[in-house]
Image 1 (cartoon, rainbow, N blue to C red):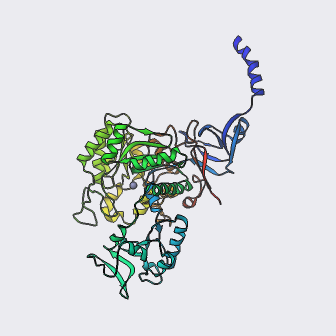
Image 2: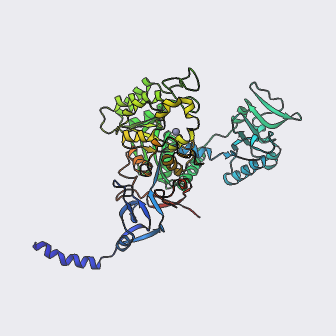
Length: 544
Ligand SMILES: [Zn+2]
């Protein structure tokens, strides 16, 4: 008691004379979905050294802290930095180094896009893909004449949408040593007036591919940076890279270390011998922005091309069952090796046969591991009884836009019975207590708002079907936001550092133009990102 009386005057003096506490950033006047365990909202928070220091109201935090920077959200909505739990960042970046010609309405438009692309990228060899003369007014193959006049010295090669034909300029023909005399079985060099027109069909295209420049380090750096930019513009702060290698990991890590890359990466290794020999021996690799602790395996193919491994024959192809890419025996020995190294195993499984194989292998491999969090990537078609294999040890990592991309034809493949266990996101959530959500870009679009919309509304971007696709498997908005933040983080063993706006976590957050938790459902896909922050730093802000 005596001690306390003695201390009181001192405290009073201290609080009168002390200055405000210092912080790096104050974020105020926002509707903040903190995604903490009670799913509470807040109005403001402060950041110091890249981490959340305190969450509260604008007035109290403004009074308490002296912040170097203030971000006034002007009533906008803030969510924890969005995570894509299954994507291919490098592949997206590589595709961005080529001219995208999908949807062009004329050959003139093709040329315009090529010129605009080259103005920005200045590539030694221009490669493009996606034109379709059937979409043009003049439904004929183009010729190299215009390409030659625009690009007399730079080789250009533009593939048709189906990949079976290409238009090239004279420089590209010259490099590939293709002349009017070039004859190849299984293809054709199309001639006009006895000279190559620039159109190559099938096999001669190989001669052109052989002259493509080899991608150097500079190319990959450009690819990563371009893809990162796109992700930041759409509010993503962490990407789960689903299948990568030491070269890409070390390149991304070096960019992160030098401050040239902000995005955080959870990197899944492919099962290549060199990857496994190196990393499983080395153990987990973890920095603030790079997390290597998992291996990605492909159990089977895709449903669209009937490569998914099914227990019974396809409903639209008698006698056909698809096929396993990695059989159960190989998966089993891999699983034991990976478990021993303390790594997670994340396996692509689409068909019901692939899924049960993976689930059996997992159950056996993790039975003595307390907290393995092994993931089934896609978990697309599951036999009803097999859902019970999913638990807090075996987690589903799913892509809601797959449901709305496949819904037009999926039932043709598997029939009206098996479809009940397909894209069954709510059922999976009930079994595991969580779902990690992603897109699989560039297979699907990058925009996480499409994921959000597909998960809650189960409609495509034309708002079809009107009542949603098998709505018993829809997720609530709260579940969806968790799946894109805290649950995705949990599936990466990162829930103590990200996935919610809570004291001590990285200040990764996304500022949205509208409140996705309350606006009419059909407005969700059009919601824009106002700003994206990683580690308390603004890495994107809209100019609108
Ligand atoms: Zn994928």
